[in-house]
Image (cartoon, protein in one colour):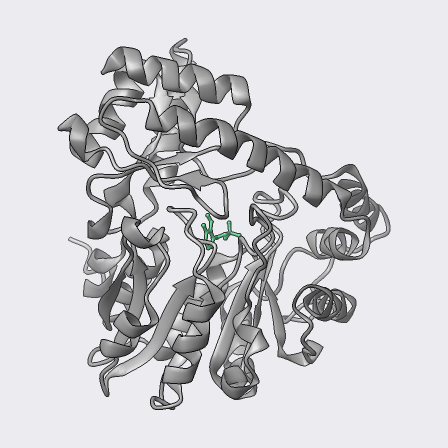
Length: 387
Ligand SMILES: Cc1ncc(COP(=O)(O)O)c(C=O)c1O
């Protein structure tokens, strides 16, 4: 009998990958599957970015890079943050990592241990709760509600801070709800944090460029009063359709950046060099493809939400960002998990049960609308027929 660490049993997972595997298995058996489960753009990475990666390989960028990333890439990130958020960021505080996930893993590893409390959105990206539990810290949910468009309430967050709270994780625009927290609420959270100087914030802004109807992104970096305790998570996966390249970054407070780099050295040494060169091309090249993708998602959003609202028993609030719709399905009489399994098995439509994103997701299903309008319409038709 192998004697693994007890913490291993506390590690959760991201069911989107399990549903993807089941959907692919059904497709391999000849079933016609529409996949609205996985959260990734259905576009190719723009050609000039691919070319930069290929060129880097041809030019001989085959070795290790600095653990925190090539300086030119970190400078490009700093320039991009200035362009988008109007903030000055020292490239030495930027740590390039393989995707969005390592920054959240490292943040929780830095603060989480038995006796500590970490707050996280629920329903939210499932890895937050998983790694908090893994660290031994207490996972304290920030309940997100349909009534407020799944924005968080600053008062509710502040009310749950205790002397044991070390880190608060926020995510706007959000997965799985598409919720966007208004600036006024973020202002109130930041003001309230003045009374809790021991609390750090991880702001997951991976969907920061996917906002609709004229909404402007509010970055936690824009609040100088908490800059010394904000960790920003962002990356290329969603914005540039680069999920498989594995490229993301954290902007760290000065007090934590060395620890973040040490975690990189212990974990993966550095990000693949060619990928980093592609990342430079993404940030410094034309941004038209980003605008085109966001426009396409917006068009699909305007199709899927009214369509979902026409399914008997479904009720869907308007998502303000990301590429997810999160309808309430309680009136169908099905649990989230039963609906997910039934729609996949009987209608050939992959969606993700709300409970995959935490207990507060019961009664909801996540639809990723990073799929063609025809596929979306056909999926809804099949679900209606199945019900
Ligand atoms: C909110 C959120 N943060 C982070 C990530 C991780 O992104 P990456 O694939 O770059 O690790 C995702 C991916 O779905 C996400 O939805």
